[in-house]
Length: 310
Image (cartoon, rainbow, N blue to C red; front, top):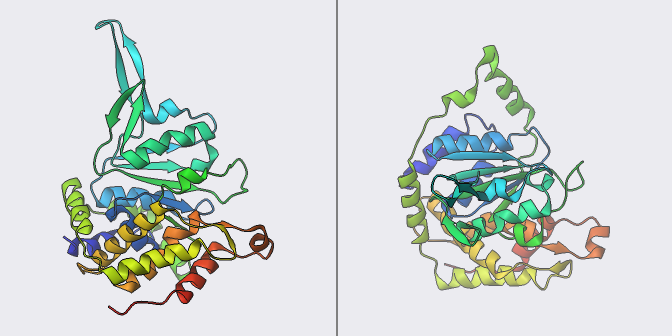
């Protein structure tokens, strides 16, 4: 099944130009069973990429444009009284999809943001004391504008930690931007060219195969050492959690699978370490004053931790 991942990436590239690494990381996140946070300025293709993934992978797709007016019940669902049966009947919320796009999540109230926590961690929602399982597979693609943008608020740390990776699209190069214009001449929409490559059952099979990718003990020690280094780095007030260790392991296995291997090597860990760790690290006040970034710090950690020979 790993052969299909190349075809999936090629289909996504029909609408997302020049972002091969970002596409690969997003697919890796989905294969690992994780959730993807896309942080960037408006208009760079975050929503387009989520829609392209849903079409390419045959996923049931749902989207909510988050604003301060969106309520938790809009996401998780609610119970209403049915006078015919004289019972409370549960009405599903918007989150009941294989791929749920939480667009501009950091514009919602903190109460509404927290409605996603149980769904992202447990794959279920609880309403009025009753628990309802979400469809499998289930992935949240969340977008947010950079912190400080008009009308935004910071996502709570507990929610940030539930995203397997954070990626940033960035602006396209001049040539990619030109190709983007050419591809939309005469009213053509490249999204119409995106073809389904796999089904929901096949994605579940790929996720199962990813879970069985082998990780040797030296590579496990390397993963633990990298995460441990975030907890002792002088520029970090708080390092990564044990959940981050599990996410890094799962992402490394998925990236190895993407590379058509059934075992993890250190380069798989190195490729996935920055997007897995960047949003989980809290800088010290001194580091913020010196305008250090978590990206720089992850690179420093990768250089400082010895790479095992496998």
